[in-house]
Image 1 (cartoon, rainbow, N blue to C red):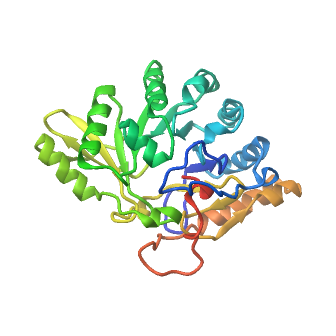
Image 2: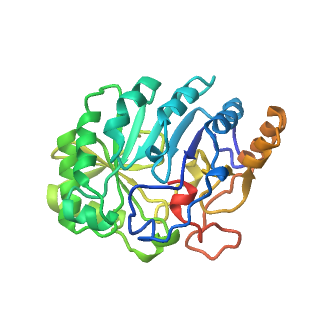
Image 3: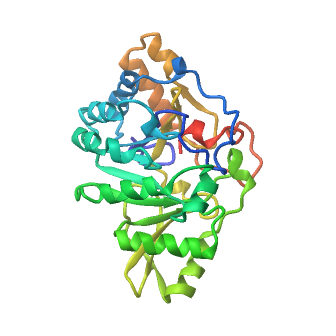
Length: 324
């Protein structure tokens, strides 16, 4: 389905939970987190009900996020339920990978096709500092295990926040060694992310040039997202950048979001959307639900305005509550 800006909306990101097994400094406080009540979280059946309607409207690609999605029980069951929906062509997952190795066999058997692994550094002590206690060795072990599934699309996502130049280069070298695409994700000015100034796309490209020599733009896309890519000429390695703020790509945005408590959002920034959970609990018909979701998609905001003062935004919310 196309929205009022003629963008083809075919992709939905679904937050399964606001809970996480890490406490990354740019995402969460160290303690005192108020979680969503369990009764407010969408059940798997409710998620499937939404997707059955959304697929009729042209949604083909589904990404499961959190919080950390794998802290929720039986995620592989949900993957299997989603892959059975007519019209859904792709199901993928974003995870910090600490729980991935023990669940990957079941996820693959259920039909999972892609995993984006959030990994900001391979430095043990720095990882522990950024995540407030996380063990990077578990993530690296899971990445090695995931490489045993050649049919699985893997990507590494790195948020430059507290890293030094050498930490960035170490991530680039690790990605090349593992033969996994690496993307640098710009910090969003939401919640605790406002407190940090991460490295910009231009700063990282300059660092790559200083370290490896010639770096040139790479025009092909390596996934569903709106990343821009560069190639390190000497090695042929492709590095991606998702710079939502400094390099706005709203005109290409093809996604909507479904929060863990059942709120469909046309744009990450804005509060406007549709709270589907009470509608589902009240027994709304698929016909009526289709009309309401269609309205959200058609009226998807033209662009975010994070660098401007705009009313009715969701900036005070935390990223782990909205869905990364």
